[in-house]
Image 1 (cartoon, rainbow, N blue to C red):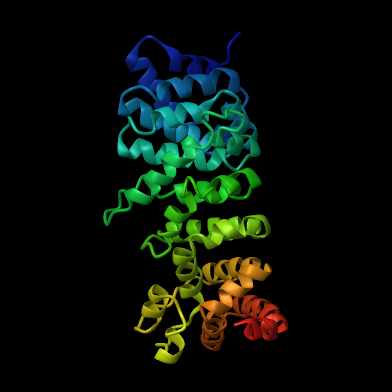
Image 2 (cartoon, rainbow, N blue to C red; image 1 turned 30 degrees about the vertical axis):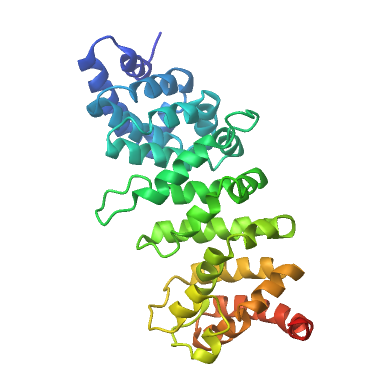
Length: 332
């Protein structure tokens, strides 16, 4: 005999629009509490497919269904079942055909699902040679185009998806593929007014630099964007003299020769320094860094720094440069 909760879940598939609407409002409310989530988690085989179907209905039904799925996907077991059901593909099919408020929720759902390896593989379309990478290309394009001054930025949380997928080698290789040019697009968001976007860009960039040993050439291909993104956050807030900026690429030198705001978030400065460290571990990366007067920038930035964790990151990079400095200067 069905329990009351089972009967409620069954109403999600009722032919009556009124019953479906009433049921989804109750279910969505239950997912807002820990007790409700635990109770609903006992019925994944009937609950999750029903919620997925409701995403295709009108906004008054689709939106609470999306909210319920976002809440339920915080449970890793339920998230794994959603991935098995093909929910990532379903979300990507719907993403560009729904109201902005629902789009925001679907992106949040992808954030949660890509915290699992299976979710990352599904979003990367691993194993499908013809389609591999297309989902990521679509969301990167939307992420880089969608920022606005208004509060409505449905693709803002793509920043967190990019951090998730770049934790895996397959994700990093896709982002670093020069033919696709994805990292080049992402880096340009480094000076976004959105803190979430900035955190995502630097987290993704740092993760991609784990591939520096094998992918250094691809990183240096985008040096025009890479060095300003990594060095401006750790350059301090002093106005640099011409004797320093004349040895830098134009964009970097110009930015440092005027007054600018310091990046407040110490985590971003740490991530930038960690990325620099991984690049200059390679001989060619170190030579490239010396050629843009990078050590001078870090010297000035370190003088302004007060956060102990960030200072430690500067010192780690500095130690590497000191041990190799003589060799690099003698080559120039």
